[in-house]
Image 1: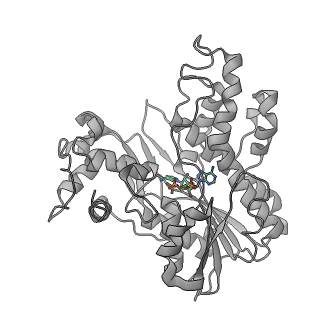
Image 2 (image 1 turned 90 degrees about the vertical axis):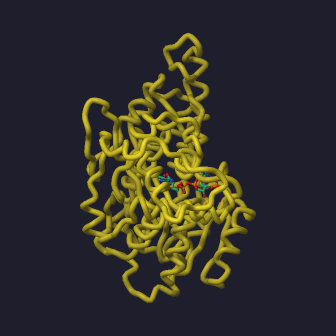
Image 3 (image 1 turned 180 degrees about the vertical axis):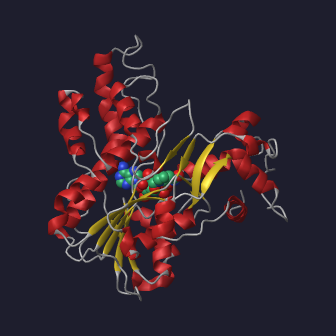
Length: 400
Ligand code: NDP
């Protein structure tokens, strides 16, 4: 099946959506370094200035185009023309989306359900519409106008794979889907946290769901678009098209930043957490227990960008979801790695210490199998020590 297998890659043009974001900026850079021509999309011209400056050395191998509203039908119609491949990375990453039911759930007396239901569009508009319509929209634009496209890579997430089970440790692979987030979305209530909403947005964008039509008439037309998502749309059309789909499912992404950030507060969501717990002297007030027991799985942003590039080049990636993960971590692991750097980074504040080594005995309730990534990409992942060193060097260079 199609892949961009023929180096040199000069002349092969790749569209990167949301290229002003944390992950996508690295994807664009990696592609440029590999010899590709890159078309970066941003929401507004001003958001492309930093990118244009950063990549100016590549001359006409880099261009920025504005796609102002990825939720609109046909938004990517022009952008996909003449490209050989797509990296669709743009999607909202926020854990703060409005709660459609109010914080106490649909059955609570605080927010009567009839009133609370009118808040569903807040959730839809902030998170799910851009995630779903953005993904479907770009695929539909490729179907109609992407005559030269050979492969589309969509950045999904391990959020679309895992589910929580406090009773037992679990290991997930590409056969797993986060149905739990969709069930909680439907049920509402206190379990519907910002994290669950984000997970639902990624699951819906990648897979879709059919039972959400229980939502009120008013929202039904918007939800109906969710009934077809990335994989389904590609499956339905694969016999008549010349391109294939690859989905990358990363867990938490950490590592240095190259997109435009001016203050720690303007970091993307995952790196902001990392800054708050690993580079703030008191780990933002979190307890030692929190630091030793809270974590997840992770990948360095540069390895993720490499995976996105390999996803274009490896024929065997065709029609696969691929989990990429360097392994598990707790915040204390990064704190220990930070304090082991010699000479220490010159930061504007002291590093936290926590309880050194305390994460060694911690339980990891969620793990991911990465056999497929190993087989298809053969990637060597950066270690916690390497990522920590480079991220703190980045903070030091920014004077933080
Ligand atoms: P960023 O917030 O840094 O970048 C998100 C990008 O998506 C930005 O270009 C942003 O544009 C764009 N975007 C967000 N909302 C909209 C919207 N409503 N309409 C148009 N564009 C929008 O996030 P990351 O780089 O961290 O994430 C990139 C991708 O990686 C996402 O798909 C995310 O789900 C996935 N991912 C990230 C993980 C992480 O830990 N960071 C983990 C797993 C997956 P603008 O700047 O204009 O808002």
